[in-house]
Image (tube, rainbow, N blue to C red):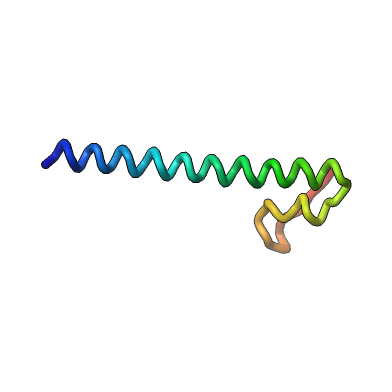
Length: 57
């Protein structure tokens, strides 16, 4: 029983990390395209949406 739980835990953790990695790479790719197109508004969509966030270039 313990081995099955350990396997399930490891499989779940690896899958979650893979999904997060895919999401991060997707956002970064979208930001790259927006930056290369000079679209600062689209570039900032990947960041925290809050008035406290400042972007300085």
